[in-house]
Length: 344
Image 1 (cartoon, rainbow, N blue to C red):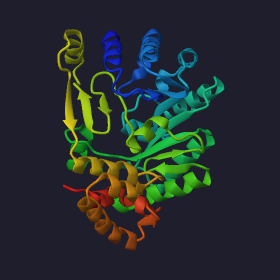
Image 2: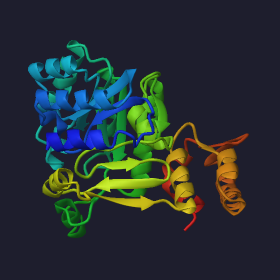
Image 3: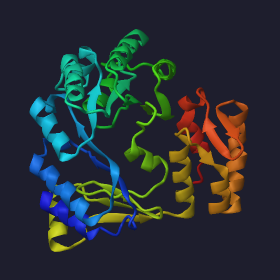
Image 4: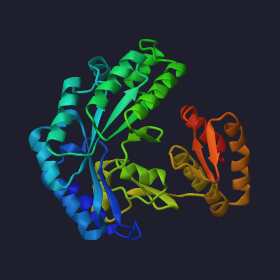
């Protein structure tokens, strides 16, 4: 597998149009189980074939139970300078419900250890909208996180995927989820507490201290090019999307035999507009109506101006010169607002 990924890095060296790399992200599944030599090989191959910025953000996704002293020291020596730790909750009941293999003590201890060993850029993820999670329990979760003095976190409302055990439990009324009103209440509380603790809410689900926004995720939201390597990895070059097969076997066979191991979609003008709306609206940088006017047809610009009016009148959107951003109240309705602005 690693050899195939090295080969893909080589053959796709021109995909980013010689842009300098500011972020390398080991994600998807559990990349922390990679051997040190494998991480070293991948980073070395990237270095040989691409121009990497001196201050590039090198992130590795991991779980609390993956991180011991030896592993953390090794990751730091390899150049990993940002950890994305899948905490999800600091409450043991929540963790049991989500079938997580770590407990709350392990979650806190791994962060303390990482900080002690010199990691100065740590992000975690939290889940809200859980069945037993009232506002008080959510506040406890947030308090524990803020006390750890990390630099960044992501917070997501629980989503139910079809054909999962949780979906089955919900459909059979064995698990009761909080209603939309309670979820919005938790989201609004989250915004308030994040602000009190000097976190900037720079994207709907992401909060960072000044100077610690995620370079990697910001590239998605700013419609910048990105290159994905390995099974299921996605890439984007402004005009098209490309995604690799999910099967490890088919991926390796495709790389080895130089046959097709990916699908490509050329984005229409309407799809490019929808993409810009979806990603930009979620951020503090917002939508630039001048970009819509200059890049897309007048008909699309007219549609945008018409549909945005009702959301401005509801005070869910703030319009300052050409920049359109969500108000604090509007952030809870980001998906509905984006859907209104889309062209189908």
